[in-house]
Length: 244
Length: 125
Image 1 (spheres, rainbow over the protein chains, first blue to last red):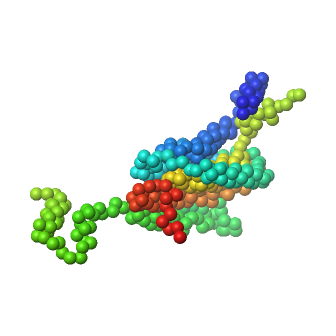
Image 2: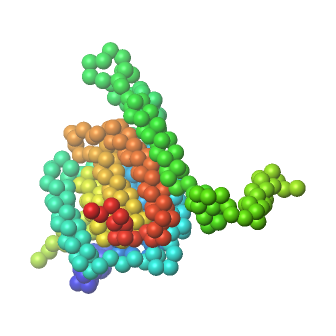
């Protein structure tokens, strides 16, 4: 590590890189890639759940920068708005609601860590080998800059492809888009959110007394108990109607 | 022995050459593996959820890289709009999945007063 750094410094001093030779697209790619990967590793390394959420925000934001650099401006904007702005806020609320004392930093056992590290290293080796194994993927970018526009993606979502004509189609615009998947996903999102609200709803809290009265099959023994329950009911009703 | 600076220090070589799809694939692979390790290692249910987010994000990086006409080499056809739309769907499904998983976590926390996934063994036979 240190020798590599020293070599880098030596090389910079011996032959300083002319600024004009820097490919700025690559430069910003390296910056965003380092941020995304570094904060992803930080998510894994951190033990504190609140810090993990913070690092995840940074990692996902840097990934949005990578999307912008790849020419997918709309996806990058959606990544920032939905992921960083929506999902992460949800996650942070979850952290806030459950981060009590001992659960802020739950440490896994040492054996778990070793197994996860070995599995991760093997998986990473396989994926990296696969990433560099196809020649077409290693070809340097041509830099064909398309017009930044959300029109093709918006039209495709309502069912029309304006970006490329279908093979052998008489009209350039007749090509099935993504209307059906779009509808399925939107209904799915609605159903899922209703289900989530149902799952996480606040349960009606029963007082121990009410549970006790409901559990006993015989009616309350004394008049005083009747009166107490009646008082509770009338008090509840007066709260509902705004009081007297 | 005279060697070029670019060949001696790989970082400088990366700085002067255009990026390719493989670079994006490397980033996606690192995010994916971080997510897998996070899912396997964390005991907090929300930590496991964050691992899932990282995995989905790594897959999204790959989709966008294959979809980008900017990154493709000469004569290679990109995935075009398909990849970007699939990435959008993945983002939407990740949001839905996060909502449900959070609801389940909160419900579990209300019932068991813990978010430790190792304690969630009520269904163990």
